[in-house]
Length: 211
Image (cartoon, one colour):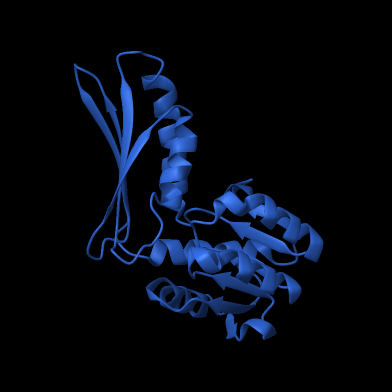
């Protein structure tokens, strides 16, 4: 997929943004100011997401949206992407491992929850700087389970991200866990998403890159 050197813009220079910069340079892409870039990678704040998307759209820039916590505004975003004729790819989590984990949880839920003896719940842990709760990944896991699933959220210390799904019965407890060891996997996924998004128009999710 990485066959062309891209001109990428980066908005949001926290820990995640800094890791994205490392990865995009490692993959031989150019880091430019947003108004000079072809594709903008955004890891900012949920409250700024809609305004940022509109601003990038007005500039005619394709967008990889790594910011979470704005998904209730998805219909408005769809209209903006159509109006400005841009490409935008969003995901609650850009890690390959997490996206495979979603598939595993989906299959496990179908099997375990076909038995009334089993109930399901989830827990997610993140660093204390993460603003949205539950996390975008927790919401995606709830959707993958396709049944009511209570999710607890913990914000503490410097945890990159841990998500756990519990299938509980009187007889046993089954635990499925994804634990991020660093932000590198998320950053790599965002840059690979930008490589896929070049020259495309429309609204996409990370699932589209797998097909």
